[in-house]
Image 1 (cartoon, rainbow, N blue to C red):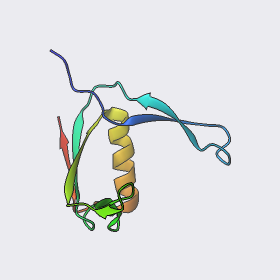
Image 2: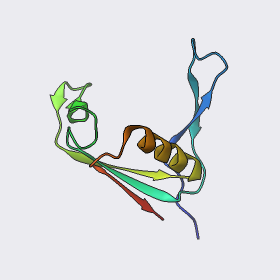
Image 3: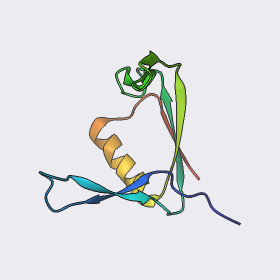
Image 4: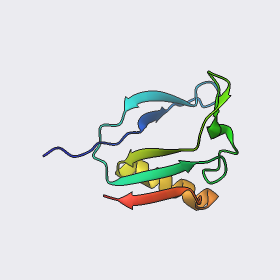
Length: 96
């Protein structure tokens, strides 16, 4: 039986944040422990409407739902961010 893996990318902090704040470490390969659904409707997600605009095409897009799978480390980062900014109405976290 295979377990779902985290869908976020690993970021690696660097020593000199003035020039390079972080590096892309590739996709996270850790086992997912939670699922995060984010409703992008321009308000609930906290994007201030930017989520309903496609910068490549220059067109408005319909509301959509984003699904992310989080490992233990990314879940901890998400919980810390929620503690700092407060919960968003459009986020639903489900532990797997």
